[in-house]
Image 1 (cartoon, rainbow, N blue to C red):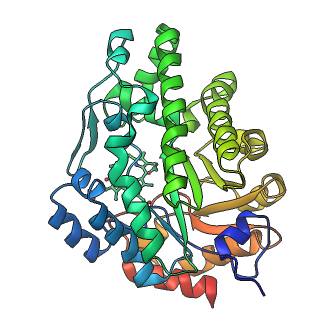
Image 2 (image 1 turned 135 degrees about the vertical axis):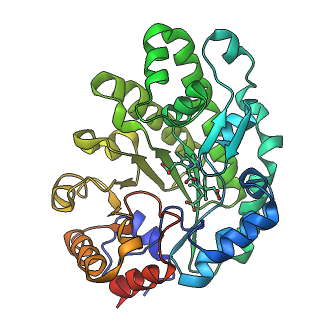
Image 3 (image 1 turned 180 degrees about the horizontal axis):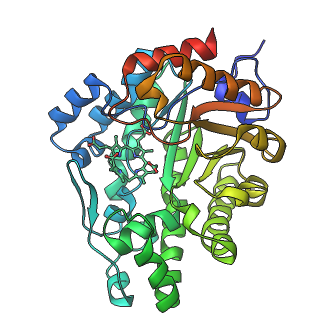
Length: 343
Ligand code: CP3
């Protein structure tokens, strides 16, 4: 027997009979208690920067479901905010930002070491959570990967194909590379402070990695992840890292080893049998249930959950969805999911 937390055991390479489980966006609008706290905070960003309320919404799904991990409540777009971009959220539409289209726009941003006053409430959220979480629950900190964050800073919003960012990297590579460098370096500082404040695991979200191909994937998804993880582990030896180069396809193969990640999160499109053969020998895997099952539930949810658990039972696995749980999800289906996994 061991006292080590289940999630940390999987991350260190153990194959467990019952995989640990948490869900991307587990604190969110599908929960009535989240909607209540969010209304109290006013808007989404005010909730992120209110340490007491952010810790409260982080804890809500832990109380309700007893997940094995809690991910601090924040957003990947707080970093552009800290660097001096304008960031706001339009209800029902998503994020909006001031745009960076040339060297002049980039020159207005702050430096990598100038973010900590702005991020102080986030570090405080983590410190509260280290005290309030059950002792068996692992605390996850996170950031967006430079490419994904850059796509929002360049376009000023979410885009279906990341075209404005692709355009800039081709038309003005010097400005684009300088923005990527600033994001890589400030992400290292931000994540390093998260670890100091109590994060036990770090996850890096590269939600738009799938639109990078070939050399561009290597240069803008793989290399920044490697730089961030190498420096983070130099400063904090042993800190486990989950990498999520979403929709990387064949480029998932070898990614965890190349960047030094302990776990590779996989999206809904990845076949689990293929992943067990080609990805799991290199690292722990996390994923990949389609979030739509959390809306529809029933036998399909049970069957698909069992299929994923069975496919990965020969190696280290953290159960999760392939993308965030949506506002339309039925909270009862999360109970069904947990019963299916834990018996
Ligand atoms: O997972 C968690 O529970 C932790 C908190 C978390 C949020 N966003 C809260 C959030 C995390 C880890 C994120 C990551 C994030 N944010 C990503 C990467 C993962 C992914 O989904 O691909 C991205 C691309 C963002 C940027 C972002 N934030 C978008 C595009 C949106 C709007 C879309 C939406 O779902 O509303 C957000 C808003 C957001 N971030 C919400 C939450 C709970 C909804 C805000 C609300 O309450 O209205």
